[in-house]
Image (cartoon, rainbow, N blue to C red):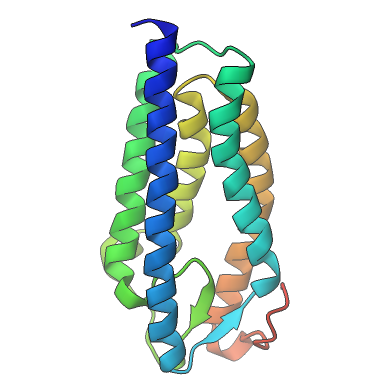
Length: 184
């Protein structure tokens, strides 16, 4: 395949991920309404805009870097990165399906509901973040956008540390954060 064809195919892939993000946001909005109707409290709202900006920058970087820096498609890197990207999507949607109306892009906790211990949550406390980490590294590398992969991965590591600490605190009844919307 020529570089133009692979770059165009990669652009379509990234645009499909963008479309998938809009579907996620619609699901999260619906689920957020369900949770709020049941008295959910939000934790860590202060870091949410940072998360949105970082994830938007990842997708933008995936679109810009390969075109602007004339990054090649390297089959030995690109095909495994694509497989990892698809596996990350499958894990993310397994999380969404397992949590049902309790899955959100925000940290919304409905008082009195037990922790979910089914699906991928049988194996990991925060499997969705495994999907985020894998996708954030792999999606850019499908077309050798290594600067985007590196920058996102470093910034995302710091953000996930904040996010996991926030969720763990919010889910621990004896240590619950005040639901002020302030970052932990």
